[in-house]
Length: 144
Image (tube, rainbow, N blue to C red; front, top):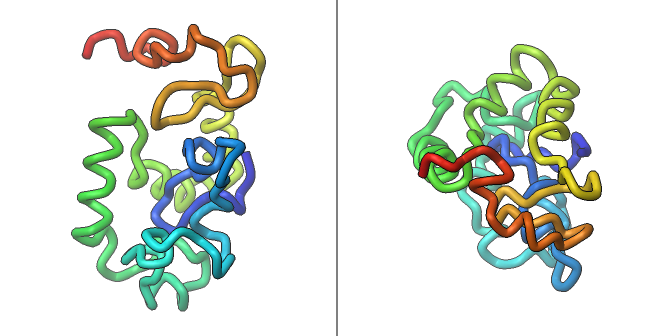
């Protein structure tokens, strides 16, 4: 887990399947690469002028925090992927980015090989363990 992979919205790009995959790998939302996929270049949150001008580069410093777009994104990710950008941002604000990275490393660590489990599909892209395809069981989400 790297601090440079935490996007302004609080997403940990290090657990995103687009970052973890080997082919057409995304460099992460905080990356300034001009060759980012078009939907990442057009991201309303990533392109917010307030974020670009604040000291930390994170949404929590904005006077409109949390904005409507961030609330919508957080609701989708909390419901579908059991991770919250708003919780991540609050943790960074209150405890620092190192605390978030430690928590994320524990939460998304593959029990088979120690690699990283994708929040989007529950698969470890290091070992590709078939056991990890059932993310509800591995990540303790059996009640759904």
